[in-house]
Length: 483
Ligand SMILES: [Zn+2]
Image 1 (cartoon, rainbow, N blue to C red):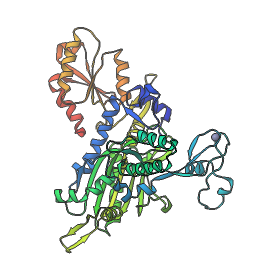
Image 2: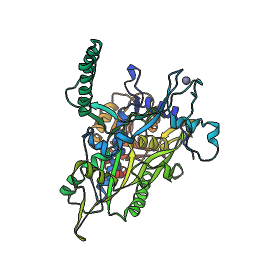
Image 3: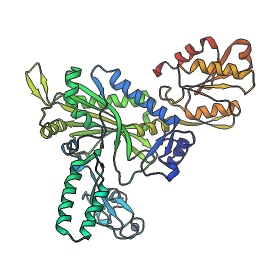
Image 4: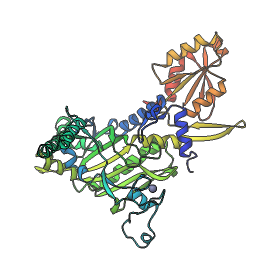
């Protein structure tokens, strides 16, 4: 079954219910940056916790790491990002729009490119206005920054002033110095979390005393200055990754690759993504990144079609070898059995938190007819649901409020809760259904007599009456899979 949500409807649900807001919205936003609201941050945290549980806590062979976002710039020379992490960009000479040449070529193939398997011919005409396009320039996707007290703009302004003073010699020397200074101060916001793991290989190996095969997992922000961000939070300029670098003996890499594809697929199923919306695709050789021997993608059927949720690459010994070469530090593993130093191979499952959030929400979204009305319900796995329990007094009657408040106080130390007493009880159930709250606890006038409340189940809408004294246990039992 295809997802029932269009991208527009999904984005509007996200905004209306406080999951995702446009970044810096009151200033007109900024392309490719998004802010997560009160429910979005809960959902994101739950996704990250569920991932960490599956790949670190439950496994005997993976440990965690949290490396810095800004790294020594030589890291990105060694990794190949300075040289090759770029997209071809073209500008329209008439309307000044900017496009990715490879995307244009796919979306608007030149007539002659339709024959045979010629490499993508880059279009020469603007798809918007028909104007002439520039020849493609490679645009590096890494965000640059400068570390230390260097004011690029002031330095350039001074050099330009000298140029205008016609002291050509001094100005050109000054610009050369400035260029050197800038080069020395240039750093990048990491375009992937992976390199933080590779450069810490030896530190983690020594301190954790792990034996091959073992993995290092990390969750963190990464940044890519995408030419054309888009599809809501699917392709962002700032995003969050959940990555594992799993180190194994050369020769066992294909086996471990298969293992991780299966494990990661199972994780999406475990947290509720339907089989029919999930598929595994092996990339064609011409789609592989410069470091990869083989890559599988776990794809989800998004409104724009099948798109990548997670890539699982066999990075071979590329990264460890490159960092050994560039840093002069041997990043090898001493094999006790054979007495040899080996460079492990690496399997890398790399998932995007923002994409996961989209997929989990879209897949959980459902609409059904209830007594002649449409009920929108987010059937999120309880572990992912932002709010686990809503506390709803039947009304704002002065006798009910103190009891309802007492029940809320009782639950807050145990669960993420919400208290809602606005509008009719039916409306409030619908609100909780739409944000995926698994259980609603209702306090009514009978509560004043019997010290019991009603637990209402999101999916079945069935209600059971439970004494307040047993409420925490009753909910813990139902939410057992959440911790
Ligand atoms: Zn144009």
